[in-house]
Image (tube, rainbow, N blue to C red; front, side, top):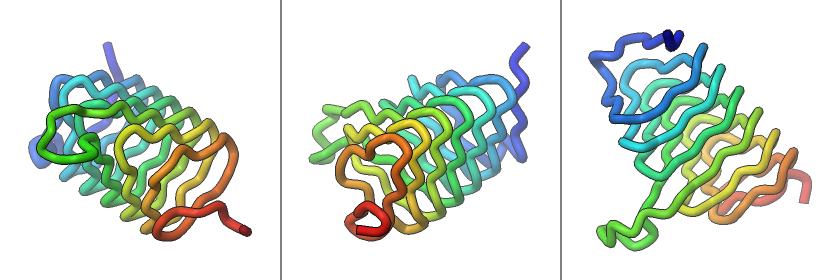
Length: 133
């Protein structure tokens, strides 16, 4: 039996998705069909995860993180976005469709990610850029 903690499932929209054991889903979260979320993830309130997103293990998504899946809406040509293991995404970040976030990377609050992020790097800003550059 899967061990998933929902803060208030009735206040969220959880589609036909896969959520790994020991993950925590806060209230007011929208998760679309065919989304895959790994084990021990924490997804905070008002986060939007549409069809086509794959999230690894031990991932933290701050409040109001928004993933997108359609580059030219409403084309219905959804792109796959991949979030590696041990990734942390700050509040209000936006991840454009078709992006890969490498293992262990960090995305700052409010960042707009427009391209792939290598493993272990920290990116901030709009558009997101490597921290320290």
